[in-house]
Length: 170
Image (cartoon, rainbow, N blue to C red; front, side, top):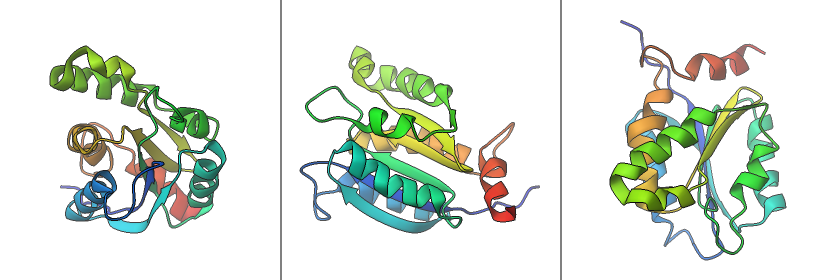
């Protein structure tokens, strides 16, 4: 049996309206990651602005002690939703399957409204980045069905941990 490797995870809430007191999605992700044995390297809230999102995320990507980033919010079509535009240019590789699987699972939960989700993921500097919608329900769907397994070194047939731990050996 393979011993579980635990990761340092950063959580970013992207919202023009949330505060630390009202950030139920960000708090859920912190709690879920901690319960899975991972360490929270940082948690921040940033307004939905392309350059502010990129600034925080770029610093985390450059930090050799952060292995994974989970963002919540800004993935829809309304107003200033700009997470995909902010994040996709930072990716060295896109993980197309994440958005596809997230929407497939969401279809069962919320029906065809899932087409309005622009959830995405990618790799940058051996850091995996998952961008999920801002609702706590969407965060639960993404974490419980996809992210938790992909950040678990014992999950087979494959997971992202091997790609992320390359950062430790640079």
